[in-house]
Image 1 (cartoon, helix red, strand yellow):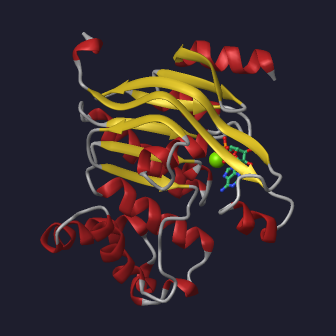
Image 2 (image 1 turned 30 degrees about the horizontal axis):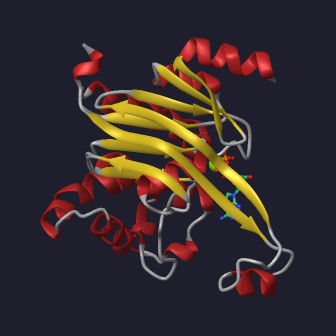
Length: 244
Ligand SMILES: Nc1ncnc2c1ncn2[C@@H]1O[C@H](COP(=O)(O)OP(=O)(O)O)[C@@H](O)[C@H]1O
Ligand SMILES: [Mg+2]
């Protein structure tokens, strides 16, 4: 059954290399001259997988395993050095809370900015605005510039936008670990509600293996950019814990 659903994300032998230079000057020279000495860090190393519509997949691995780099390639924030990344569907992503906000604009203006970036029309944004504002729960601050927000408020606004735009693919990177307990609970409920819609695909990164197990059926375990395990979430967590 599962296999009949269409592929929404496909990684085909994807490698992402970062070049590490001794100095900024060397990095600059390295843009024009391949012989400038540098080390290569393979953040993602020959990675292949497929995610189908309706899947809920958790990326599991220590700091530096390559999780964020994978999500950034899916969202087009960065590109593979080699291999192919294919994505079918609209994406809403909350990447490590750098939500693409502008600090000089108000919360409300940032809602419009962010939603426009995600390809929504003015009418669509207008329709979603009350829901987003209610969920963000920042009170009168919604019409204050973002630079006056606490980090918790920024996180709430980012999350509120991300979960209310009805994406095909929802991507959440470490985002549920911020904010107070009450807001985390609200986020958790909202993600469950989104996932109850059959066709939504979830890609999830968190420090909390409990949350991963709660949301996801499948886990991909990564170490130094290499996929070590891909399968049932409980087995993935067991595999990961056994390597710790
Ligand atoms: N912009 C960058 N420039 C150089 N190295 C990077 C950059 N982003 C990530 N890396 C490196 O790539 C590896 C994977 O990082 P990342 O994807 O952030 O891991 P994770 O999200 O699993 O903690 C790490 O070794 C990290 O230092
Ligand atoms: Mg990360």
